[in-house]
Image 1 (cartoon, rainbow, N blue to C red):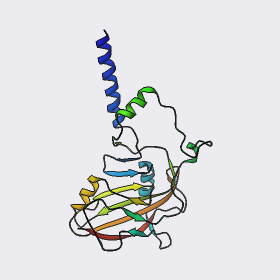
Image 2 (image 1 turned 90 degrees about the vertical axis):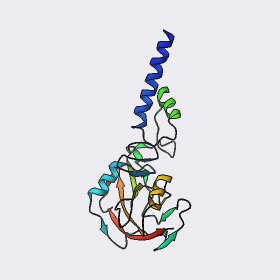
Image 3 (image 1 turned 180 degrees about the horizontal axis):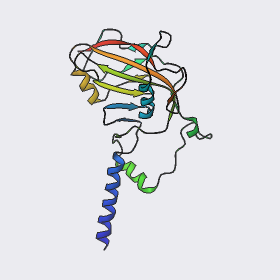
Image 4 (image 1 turned 60 degrees about the vertical axis):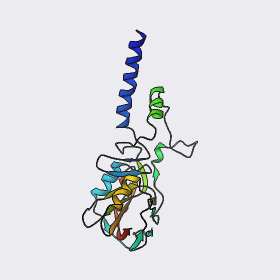
Length: 208
């Protein structure tokens, strides 16, 4: 009887672990469509950005600090791409904040969920749902003459260091790589009036 209960409990645990692997949300993860989400950026916010027509305005364009135009980047290790900040930093929806702490309000997780969190620590999430973002977020698209979407990233940060998989894709690209950046200002995953999306002129570089 005890053995049977242990087997059932173990099966329930790993079954829940399997489900959590494909539904949990991390700070960073790659979805099934290959987009990398970083810093709490959500797929709902990206959908809102892509639904709009990106406008060009020199006063709204951000500046790439690294790399510079036509720079040759060494391919030994992942390069950190850096750009100037557009407006205020993206922040989580204030309605999710605990006024006694300057951070997101988190619910108390059940024991099983806490155990699964430990067991699956480091596992990349399969979806990019999460708390709505309010503030600025950036959509980066790396492309080449043979691939329009080598790597795509949606982030609330002003820098991006590719993971090994993404860096391998960029290193494998032939010739120059073009990096396009589009940003928008959000309020609970929705683009605010006058908040874009705004397109920044693409920059080209080469990995050697």
